[in-house]
Structures are given as C-alpha cells and as structure tokens.
Image (cartoon, rainbow, N blue to C red; front, side, top):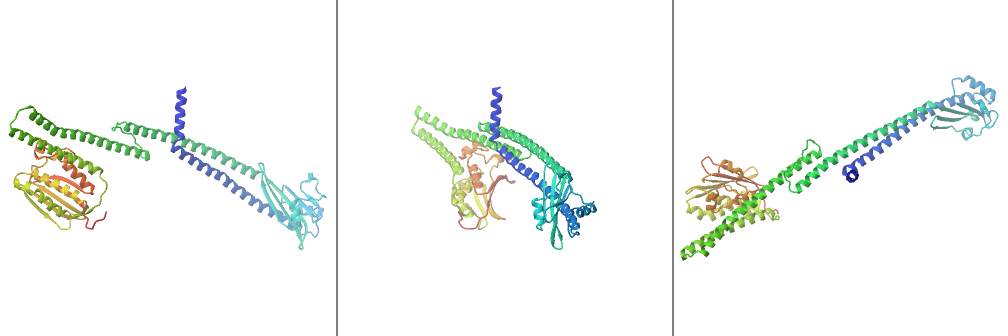
Length: 481
C-alpha cells in the first residue's frame, strides 16, 4: 500500500514539474477565459436585442394610446375609458392614465383600487414634466418593460400614459439560452481537461522513455536505440537521439581502435629497442657489432619519435584554436615540396613533374598546406616504383582549386581505399614499416583538408598507380582573418 502511495506521489510530483502540464494549465486557462466570454457576450447580446425590441414595441403602443388621448381637450375617467375601449388591439399587462395633476383616471388592474387616487411614481412624474420614459429589466421569471409618455394637447401636458408589459416567454428563452450555454461550457471544459490530462500522461510517458534512454547511454550502453514510429517532435527527437548514439558508438569504436593501434604501434619499436639493448648488455660483442646494434636502436628510436610527433600533431589539429589565415599560393608550395623531395626521388630515379595554372590560391595557413602537399607527395615517392614518375596537376574549376597527384606505384586495392584515411590503417604493413610509415600521415591530411572546407578523394589509375584529388574553395583576396 505504501509503495503504491509513494509511486503515486512521485508521479504527481513529476507531473507538477512537467513542462507539458504547465502548457496544459495555460491552455485550460485560455479555454476557460474564452468560454466565459462566450457565456457573457451572447447572453448580453440576446438580452440587449430583446430590450431594444421591447422598447420599440412598448413605446410604439404607448405612443398610440397617448396620441388617442390627445384628441380629448380634457382628460376624464369616462373619456379615457371610451378611448381605451376603442383601442382594443392595444394591450398591456397594466396601463395607468392620469391627468396633469397625477390623479389616476384609469388603471387596467382594477383590483389595485388606484382610480381616483394620486399616483406618484417617478416615471409618471417625469412624464408629466414632458419627458418620455422607458426602462426594461430582466428577472428570473419575466422581463418587465415600463414606458411613461405625456399626453399633450395644443402644446400643454394634460395627462400621462403609464404602461407596463410583462413577458414570461422571452424571459424563459433567455434563461434557457443561459442554461444551455452553461451546460455546453461544462462539457467543453470536461472534454478539454480530459484531453489535456491524457496528453500530459502520454507526453510524460514518452519523455520518461527518452530520459531513461539518455541515462542508459550515459552509463556506457551506446548501442541502445529508441523505438518510435510517430512523426511529431518527440518522434524527431527519438530519431536524432538514435543518430547521436550511433555517432557516439562509432566515435567510441574509433577511440578504442585508435588506443589499441597506437599501443601496438608504439609497442613494436619499444620492444625492438628493449630487445637490442638487452642483447648488447647481456652478450659480449665486438665494437662493430655493438655499433650496428646501436644504429638499429637509433633507427627504432627515430621511428618512435616520428610516430609520437604525428600523434601529437593529430591531437593539436583536433584541439587547436582558430588562428589567422592568409592567402596561400599552392604553386609555390608545390615547388617547395619538390625541392625537399628531389634528393629522395633522385636516388630511385623518380621523375617529379608539375603542370600548374596561375593564381591557384586558397585561404589557409601556409604551414598546414605545406604539410598536406608534403605528405601526399612523400607517399607518392616512397611507394612508387623505381624510375617511376610523380606528377602534380593544379588548375581552377568553377569556384574551386583542384590539385591532382598521380604516381606510378603499386596502387591500392579497391576494397582498401575507403579505409586509407583511418588512423594507423596501412595497406601493406610490412612495406609501410620498411618505408618508415606509421599509418597516420593520410589521417592528418584528411583532417587538415576538411579543416579548410576542402575534400580529398583517392582512385586507382588505369595505367597503374594511384591518384589523389584535393579540392579547396578558391580565394584570391588578401588576408581576412
């Protein structure tokens, strides 16, 4: 029992804090104000319409009686009664006719005994002063209309006609309208409240699912997915959540793979250094052998240093703050890269050639562009065949600058191409180690190209070898940032 009460309290507290409940309360408040307005305005309008109708009707009939009475030069009880008998079509709930002094000459309500007495109603007093008086009031059972008009003969007030009309049918109609509007209002309020409560419960339940999914993912279950077939905002939120978890899962997989690959790649030269150091320390060797071992240890240390530097470069690239950019001429960078790589290419008889258009400029940092082109060209030399060629093409295409690097190397298998920009991925690991590769260079190139809103692709050449294509937005102005 206490568990059920605690659960209900928790649910109530969650609903009270719910944003949806606040929206529902605001919606109910607005609906209530609209319903109140609908209850007041139509009823008031109908009442005013009835009152105006009564005013026209009662005043019209009272004026007819007053005009008929004005035909008498002097009002007397007998004369008034004769005129009333002639006006049998004019009927009131009660009609009183007085002379100029306020003495009652005729009263249709005979039981009241007012004839021959002075009737000092405020309405009659106002009418004897020459004013037309009319008012209408509505009660629960009837609508009472009252009119008082002076009887004027040759410009003089000789009496007054005081008429009262009671209408129970119109009153019942107004009461019925009010009752129906009240019933409709309660039905609408109950329906809206029920719909709002159901919506709040459904919304809260779906939000609880989303919050629970967030907690599960926060605990490390990145493969968790939300099932949602709705097309509303919460359905879109669920789709975005699933896309986010997929991205997180992919990132986490890449992180683990990166850590594993980095550990493996760093462990290899460290193991080699440790093994060769132990061999020197534990075995008697001549000077020449020791020098060879020390040379091998130095080579492994250099490879470890290069690998560490590239890892640091990747880290700096991901977390580096924005720096000032400048207009960089790609042709000048290509010439600089060729001058640096010429000795390595000359040793293997590799021919370096270029065909470049003028004013192929981009907005970037010169050091980064140099790093991109050097890595691409260096790979083209390292993995080329002896006496091969390395060709760089540079030209404009629409609003872009395109750089193509062609080599005559062994090429990359088609199934391996989608992965060559992954960190530590190498097509031929044995050959990569021989060439001093770490599997990080192309990952650095890819990230740097995207940093400057460019794109890089790789494809196999029909004549053999590989083609890298890099595209940058063309920029021909001066320094902007």
